[in-house]
Image 1 (cartoon, rainbow, N blue to C red):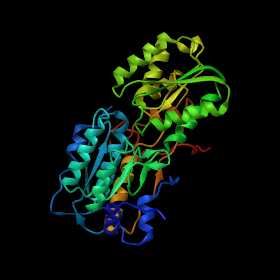
Image 2: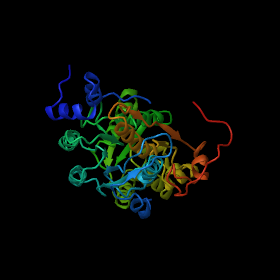
Image 3: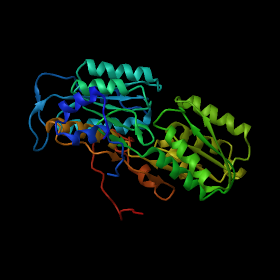
Image 4: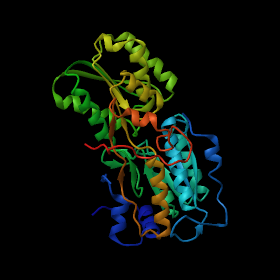
Length: 375
């Protein structure tokens, strides 16, 4: 039987008073398949008040609950649709949210933001757990205080959550990195391949580079795979990628495991016409416009979509349902997916300007056209 710290046992009594099932909820480690956001978006989230709130639908009147998202790169364009997702869920459910944390992946700043939210009696927390130890005590403190906590985007080391959170909403990170490497191996069987990572060691992207490295090792071929740190700042990262390419001519492949580094790879491939110099494969993660344009132009072969909108929408939904049910609705661990975007399907992303991919702030219905793609 798994023994939880006393503080977590106390939290379990408050949050989920149903015996052994709450132990599984708090200690579970499985992962079931289940540009900068506008400043006005954040100010529109509202402040916590004393009056009640009404949801749209058959839900009870509740206090004006405010949920706090703690993020590692608060102004990174990847999280624009995440903020839209949280905003849309709040509008649907009659609650509000706050977006806080660190602009440059400074864990201490994230921990301070978490502790501030707890002291301010937030009604729920969603934390990007990018460090395997730093968030343990704050999350236990939140649970002890009766504040439910979920993690999103990053959860801890592979197979070992970094906190006693209720659940995780996000991509299977190691698995996605392994898939990145496997796909590259369909195009390159020998030569030097480099993998770029903005912040080595941080648990939102380190498992991806580990997975890619393992894919090449398992293949047992003549590919040599090396890793290079870039930077959380996209401009600095681009300079590092550019300099590496100049010093390493004849690369067979270039991969990246974060949005900024992926964008930099595409820009560098184009700048030096690397397709004409033996580069066989280039790929990475996420859906920022520069990356999509690089795929269309052939400078990148693919990128991986991990559904950032859901990483904002679902934490709000799960925290809300947990609270209205008194803990009876246990939030499910949710893998937000792994979809390869290639030249064949990139047009769908470029031609649809929506909140769901962060390319537009407009609330609108996106009509489905044609057959639904499937694998």
